[in-house]
Amino acid sequence: MSGLTHLDEHGAAHMVDVGGKVETTRIAVAEGRISMNPAALAAIRDGSVPKGDVLATARIAGIMAAKQTATLIPLCHPLSLDSVSVDCAVEDDGVRITATASLTGKTGVEMEAMLACSTALLTIYDMAKALDKGMVIGGVRLLSKTGGKSGDWHAEREVA
Picture 1 (cartoon, rainbow, N blue to C red):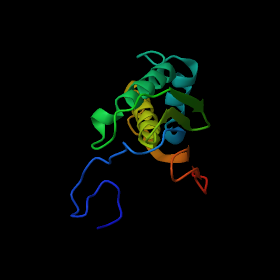
Picture 2: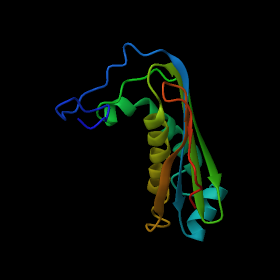
Picture 3: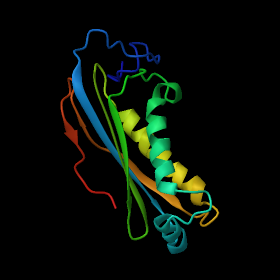
């Protein structure tokens, strides 16, 4: 019908059969950003947020989220991830999260990387919302993916 892999010939949603696919090493990298006021950023940077270590908690939350992707995103395959990393970079007016997921398997890990990134950002918001309810989360996107039948892909443009 549409050429979309999660729709059958009648347009009904279904889980893609990956049984016949070859296992390859697959890596996906996603990023996103949360901007905030200077006081909230300083508290995060200095470790003085009343709820605790914001960046460490965000990192753990992102890793935990990646492991739960199939329970949260319909039609995603449950995956045995080899690795998930969540890196937090404090910038001039916010925090950039970069999440990487990898495995050797029959399907990609893009959703796992993007969910890890999104959850880490939401965790930062949750932990620092008493300091700035106007924080803005944005720019969550796939930066790159490797492996699989479609090969490698890299984002073409930078996003602020």
